[in-house]
Image 1 (cartoon, rainbow, N blue to C red):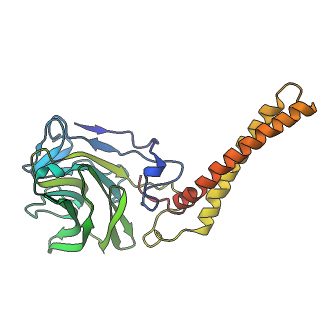
Image 2: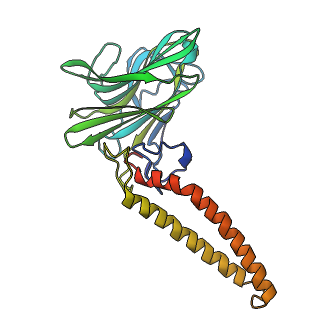
Image 3: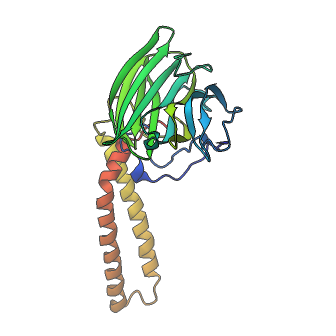
Length: 308
């Protein structure tokens, strides 16, 4: 069953698991997904247009061959959002296809090339030598199906596939991460709006798409992500991030100093010396932590992005 989430509020995510250059990791505030479906108990036709013959793997997961297109519009009214799915491909015992659809029409169906969509396709092949993957992106509109780009992809027993669409002038950017690793970035000219969707093809046995999550574009980040900035940092943003961390550390130190001064007999040489050693030890520990954190802060703030 699908669950609608209060997308306006913040959520807790582990920063270290977030790709430093993903368009979606804003500092200080992270949005949860506005819709999550683990495909348990059947396909929820109140939430999805069900095109094709996809079925539910018990107890949860999508398999077979078919396409689901979200019935709900993206809450912020844009065509910029994230799709995130958890995949279990290995048990297919052969080739299987997992798909994300962006800007999809209500009648979109991948296997029959019906409707309109931007498509992310992950083909996994399981053989005696393990699992291999091919990642590709396509554009499907009235003119046919067009390949935008492809690459070799990692493959495993459990995987995540995340894809984003972003507008930059008259260009649409489609960015894909496999297991939170940057994997593919393609562009195409502007196309009519649509809704997010997911699809499977030839997924059988215990293989399945376990969960689909739909997320928003985040406009709170101090430095909105833009194509072309992913490989270089902004020195101004770096300084701002480190300065902010330094201010937080100084405030924390001031509070501790007040605590130490609250000890009885602060003015005596013995207590003053003991307090100074305690504070110095905390300073060293905190500084080491700050030194370890600084590179992460630089990456995080320099590449803070636009989705979620």
